[in-house]
Structures are given as C-alpha cells and as structure tokens.
Length: 112
Length: 517
Image 1 (cartoon, one colour):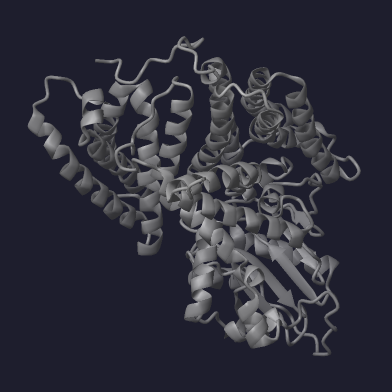
Image 2: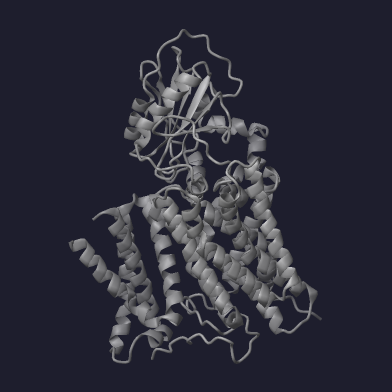
C-alpha cells in the first residue's frame, strides 16, 4: 500500500475505534444506535473498538518508523475522537456511517 | 470559622485564575505556533515572485555555484539554501551573512530575483516563542505561560469529575453547559497532545530555564556544555563560517561541482532531505563543503549538523556521530515540538491538534465570561475579560489574516516593506481591541468573526488576482484559509445561540443531541 492509503487507513481505523468505545457507553448507544439492533451488539462495540485502535497503530507503522508512528497514532486517535464528538450532536447518522462509507471507499481505491 | 478548602476546591481556584490570566497569552502562543507548523509554506505564499521549477537540488546547487563563481570568487565562504519540497527558494549568501541578507536566485537562469521584502511565515514562528518581545524576555514570558499551561492541565484533570463518563459528551446550544462540555472534551481527547506540546516546549529552553546544573558544572558557560556534549559539531562550526573569518592562505585549486556533493548528501539523508550547502574557502586547496539536511529526516532535532567533504578531492571528512543519551533526549523532545519529521501527513496532524488546543483555551476563556455573566454581576472585571476575549481570540485571527492581506496589498517595491507588514498586523490587532471596547460584547464577537470570515474566504481570490502563477502549496494555503473562513462564518452565525444568557429559548435552535431518533 502506498503511504497515503496507509495513512488514510490509520485515520479511518482510529475513528472506527473511537466510535466503538463510544457506542460501548449506554448514553451514546441510546443516542446513536437504532432500536432495531440487538443488545449484544452493544457489548461487542468495546472490544471491536479496542482492536480497531490497535490496528490504527499498525497502519501508522506502515507509513512511518516506530517512533514517528507512535506520535501519529496518538494524534490520529485524538483527532478522530474530536471529529466524532463534533459529529454526534449535529450529524448523528453521519457519525455512525462515516467509517463504513470510508472503509468501502478505501476498499474500492485499494482494488483499483 | 472558615474551613480549609478541599483539594478539588483549591485546584478549581488555581485552574480558573491561572487559566484566565495566562489564557490570553497562551491562546496567542498556541495560534501562532499552529500557524508556524506551516511557516515555510506561508513564506512561499508571501513571496509570489517565487515559482516552483521542480528541477531538483542537484541542478540548483550547480546553478548557484556558477553565479557565486562569477560574482563572489574571492569570498571566504558561500552558503546556498536549496529549494525543497516545502520551499522553492534558491538563495545564496557570502562571508557568513545572516539570514535575511541573502540573494534569491532564479533556479533556472541563475540570475538574481527581485523578491518582495516580507515578514514571511517566520514571523509566526518568532512570535510563538517570544510574543514579539525582546528575545530573552519573550522566551521567559512564554516559558512562564507554558508552566501555567502545565499547571492548568494538571489541575484541570484533578477537578474534572467524570473524565471517562463524559469522554464523548458534547451538548450544544445549552449555554454554559455546552461551553463546559466543549472545553472538557477538547482537553481530555487531546490530553496527550496538550501535555506533549507544552512539556516539550519547555524542554527546548531547559538550559535557560533551569541553569543551576550548567552553572555548577561549567561555571555558567553554556557553550562549554554544548562543546562537551557534541565535540565534533563544535569543531565543525568553529571553523571558517564567521563573519570575520580570516581568508586562508592556501594555494588556488578548482572546486568540484557542488551538485555531486548534494547527490552524496541525498544518498546519506534520503531524497529531498538536503536543505543547504556551505563552502569555506572556495577556490582554494583547503576548501571544505558541508551538506546540511532539512530538520525532518528523524524525530531528533539535528540543527547545525552536516556532512563535511574536501571540496577539491571530494573525500568525506566528517559525518555526524550519534548524539549521546543526554543530548539525544533533549533533541528528541525538541524535535517532537518542532514537528519537522514525518512529512505532510504529520504536519497536518500537528496543525489540526494545534487548532483544537486553541479551541480548548478559547472555550475556557469564554466559559469564564459565560459563567460570571449568568451570576448577573455587573462587575467591571467581567467587562475587561469579555473585551480581552474578543480581541485576543477573534481579533488575533483578524490580525493574522490582515498580515497576509498586507503582504499582497502593499506595493512590492515599498521601502521597509516588512516593517509596514508588521505595522499592519499590530495596527489591526489594536483596532480589534478598540472595537471590542466600543461595541457590546456579542456584537463585537459577531462583527470580528464576520470580518475574519470575509478576509479568510476572500484570500484565495486575493491570491489569484495578485500572483501571476499558482502552485500546490499556494492552493493548499488558499483552501485551508477558505475552510477556516467557513468555520469563522459558522461561529459568527451561531453567536446569538452561543451567547444566550441561559435563556430557555435560544435565538437559533440547534438540533439537540439524539434528535434523529
């Protein structure tokens, strides 16, 4: 993968990870998720989020050597969390679908 | 009998007062620091005479060498700043001239270029660590503010009641509640960045701020410390590049093409990683060529390092040795702050994190005013706070944009042009203060944010009208400014809702959280 794609992947994974942690909290689960989703889906959110945050660090490692990757990893997680924070009250649907949509875009871009 | 306050109460007091009194200085430091992440790019934007010719540092070094050979064959030293990814400027200086006295050259024809005299992005960088005060005083004031920032961060963590529960909580359009949410969440989510950038900022001048060890071990001679920490670099800089360096008496000998040294430098440091070439005693048998890297090929800040070659035989004489642990620690901390590593993605991460820091400090300042206003106390201190808030937060943004506008509106050949730009920056900033004193706070906020929005949104237009060519860096700055303009405009539009004095009906309704269900 080229560095630009890896960096995008890192940011998307960081966002997905923060979204996972966020949905693992009752308050935000009620705020974002639709009623149709089963309750066990919420219990899965936190582990998936943690995994996704870890993978974001791996993706940063594809772009930079270890030291720089750690800096970028922290920065991506923080900024992704801030973006999620701003999206939730103003565009809750977008907050939920952003990682799915960008994941699909990334898959298309990678397969081209 | 007054009881001694609890830890949380006393920390809350510390947080409020330290945050408020130093918050204005901190906002200015953080905003200019954030802009300084792109200092070279802003330099480029502010010198529209420079065009990107993309012909690489090797050719550029040879072009510069031809011009120096023809015009300054007898100088004791030459320094050539090479075009890089971040700057198209090829510039030469002779006999150890300081920065700013150099001659920009056209990288294709090798003829001197008339580039306007401008403050450039370097202004934001210097303002960031001196607040435009005399250097030493400024460094101390900024250091004091940085200490205050650390105090505010730590006390803020102590008084935050629900760090994890409120991790993602932001409830807009609820007056004081929203400001507190925004302040808390932007602080907590970016806490690693806030702590890192503040601590490393202090570490850059650690020898200045905490001189006791140097005083005790070296009798206060800071240069002695640096000489012992990095003897090779000291020996290298000690030679040949002073303003009054005596001309050597060695016999004449032709200098090899400088481009080949740049090639070797790129092989050592990586492609695009060579920033400058300097030559001592050009045209003589003891000529030395030093190839210097850009600052960003690793986290460690490698200022002043380089590869030294024999200019006549081309033999490598000296390469930088790895720094020892103590020096490496300091350099890595400084490097983390300078953010020169990792290329553009990393630069953008630092820039955006810096903007969130500004938002965090700004929301804290506003929060104080909102809280006091709700207590409906008609005190004069609150009036002062509100006016300073407007002119420091919105006013500084207007002033920074005014600096960019003055760069294009002032005639290119004006006498003392850079000072005129400086006057424009501080003049506009002062005007925003007067405006904030004259208008009621909400109007002042709204009007200044609108001015900032218009100036930022129209910046691309100004760029297209006043520069002959355009390129990727100028386009990026234009679009970033336009995005900032949208943010300013959006904020100005929301001011009535943001400033609702705890009214039950805000003037503009923002969709409440969770309304989608």
